[in-house]
Structure formats: structure tokens, C-alpha cells
Length: 194
Image: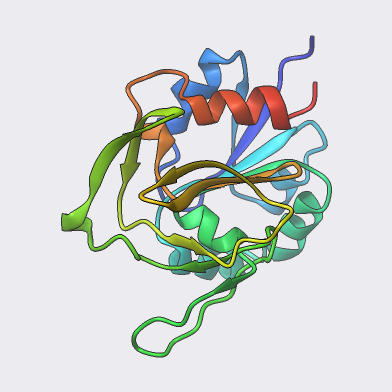
């Protein structure tokens, strides 16, 4: 079996915590910062990490990465974590200020930013199929389409979604003490082709 090469969009956010999880699954980790790196045909899949979605969008624009990202997203598996899941949504609810935010509409759900509260209201819970789910300024998934499989919920709200070869988590599996996390294992073993 060829070693899977998983790219992590490395413009901003929680990039490094994913490395141990991916390496435990036998993957090679590639940090993606340029269009050339994103379009490298040897990259099998991408993680868009947690962080600040508006900052990521600004850096995607500054470094002119949108065309390369869209080309990647068209054919390869992608997983959005927290802020990354905001970028993957069909639409983003306006902020209290009325400001709107762009998304790439990669999966059939809408998202409400920071719905679980501020940084000070961060928390962690155990879910039926996730040992440790860490919520930090987490988004809330809404209006979930019929093509989406809900893999985990917290208090009746879906927090882990899969649609085809795309995945979104509103929490941070990379902060789990269990290495690899259930989400990393699922992404690599079920969504990333050999």
C-alpha cells in the first residue's frame, strides 16, 4: 500500500496538533501554503484546520489560493475542522454586526459561527463514538441536507458530518489524547483512497 500524503492548509490555526494523529495512521503530512503545493498531484487529501475562518479567507485571497483550492476540492477528500467547517458550509449566518462571510459551499449545510460561545466558554465532552470532543468557539451546523450522514451529535445538534468524500467537525479531534482520534481514523481509512 502506498503511503497516504495528507495536506494540511497551513495559513493559520491549529495545524501541528494533527500531525501525530496522521503519522499514527501511517500518513505523510504535508503543510500546504502555496498553489503549487496545493496542486501537487501526490497529495491525497486535505485538512482545513481550526483557527479563524475570516483570517483564513483573507490569507487565501492575499496569496491567491482560491483557484487552486477549488481545483483540489473538486476531486479530492477534504475535512474541515471548526473554522475549516465554516469554510466548507453552503452558507454562513450573518454575524451580529450584520457582516456576512463567504464559504466554499462544499457540503449541504449552513453554519452559525461561534454558536457554542466565546473562548472562555470552551468545553469538552465524551460522545457515543468520540472519546473526547473539544469545543472552542465552535460553529453550529444547521439545515443539514439529506445527502449528509450525521456521525455524532451533542445535545441533539449534529457536530460531525460526512457527505461523499468530505467531512466536517465543529469540534477539535486533533486535541484528543487518543492518538489517532476516531475522526482522523475515519477520514484516512474511509474517505481517503489508497
